[in-house]
Image (cartoon, rainbow, N blue to C red):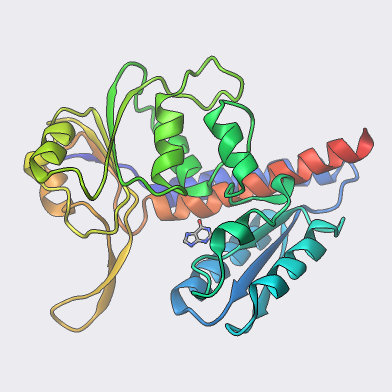
Length: 302
Ligand code: GUN
């Protein structure tokens, strides 16, 4: 049976470390790092995600607030609200929970957040800097995956990795860090050989690439996409997918992209859903908020 990579326990460890580092930093006279989460409209899943983020922030010593707006808010009104937070010296991190109502252009909104406060890492400047191996605020889910690989000591150097899913917020930054040179500026590279598969990769090719991979990272939202015949014995399987389904008893539950029951018999290591990458995403968002606060204070002194 595969080793289970317990993201929940690891996230607690990461948050405890962060709590200690923030307390230490504040003992040098700095105020608490601060995060603002913007929520537009009433999406129950988004409300839960934001609530979890606020709870975790408060746990580690980050001051955090949710700012709620009606779904009828215009794009310009939202951008004006973001700009006010950009100019507010009491705010270090700004997060706009996605998805936004259909009439609002998410790309324009992500680019309205000041890059140095963009704790989601969605601004073009942060995306560009990551792609150039420069220091950047990196999307928390991708950072969570990388942190799991590092802390669970999964070797990536020269290994073959497949990323299934090419979203700009998850698949792309994961693939970017996996293939990059560790010796370059930001130290985030993992020196793997990476194949990116997506919805138009023919099934037989998806199976071929996955079967030859030492590491499979899947982020598609397609339940049970990854089956045991697609996995090389001993491979590491990281499941970023989260889909809410209703089971045969009418109960809702969260499932990943991986057929966990069968793949866990073949893989060398596997992340569960829930309790895998999800909690690490929240922990790394806290990491990003503290990083943003530290950089902002440093720049204020210059
Ligand atoms: N919606 C789903 N995932 C995310 C995320 O990582 N950040 C934001 N802002 N919205 C999301």
